[in-house]
Length: 174
Image (spheres, rainbow, N blue to C red):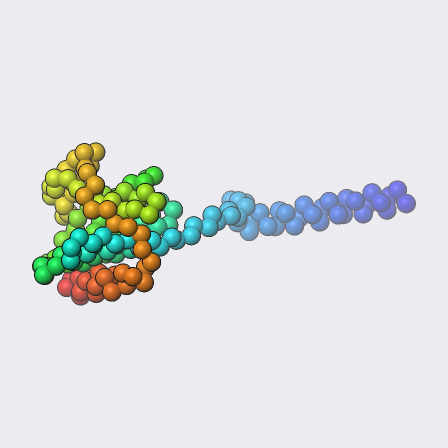
């Protein structure tokens, strides 16, 4: 009986060991599968109105990555409409490239945005050309110019559609 119990115990241990070994060996270098951290995208919409000028922004934030759309529509003037790309969020600050259609041409401007609760501040400062885009010369001294307030995304849907249309037009110009 002792022999049977010991044999059964050894067989079970061998079987369990083989199963674990098989699972580990199916991964490169015997590594166990990593559990993917679920990164959920957060879509936020903002709007700023001054008289008849309207600025609208849709941010899609995934972890520290940011993308979306930005639409600047001054009353009875050409505005800038386009896509936000290559954005990075560090704390409250977001740095993102705004690739826009403005006065029939394509331009890229680096935007510096500050996200505080229901407010999104567009930071302003002296602009300079850096490579193929315009950037704020001294970001550390930039001041909040326009403060966009959080709104339901349906409220700015037509502005975001304008920005998406500009994105499509820019792709077709290439």
